[in-house]
Amino acid sequence: MRNKTIIAVTLSALIGATLPLSTWAADDVLDNSAINPETPELIEAGTVEVEATQMRLILGGAKGTGVLHFNGKDYKFKLSGASVGGVGVTQVKGVGTVYNLNDIKDFPGTYSGMGVGAVAVKGVGASTWQSTKGVVVKMKAEDASGLALNLGINAVDVELVE
Image (cartoon, rainbow, N blue to C red):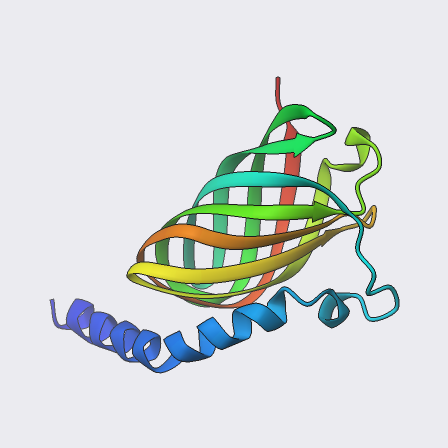
């Protein structure tokens, strides 16, 4: 019981200290020049809606589903990922914009990037991912619940589903 109390107090202190930082840093994470300084120009191609569960204790993982809205069609996908940096468990619903996607075949694959967020019951967060094919996805949490702090690097595998 004592260990759980120490962990809860530590998480609360970290989240309380970093929530303003997370809100400010979310805009920086969404700046493409931070992840790809050679080609900062992005061409908007579609949008995504994602629901995921994330668990972290320095190293972590995520699983979820989503819908890509591209060229007037909806494409369902699933994602699974790993992260470095952060602690806690969250349920996240997010929306985002997809850039530099010319063909649906280029959407599935491995994405990597940075994320920042803080959740204490309800939270904020943002992340930017770039695939090995040059597709960029910028996400913002619309609804996040749980208790967590995320300041780290993410890798996500995206797979289209029928």
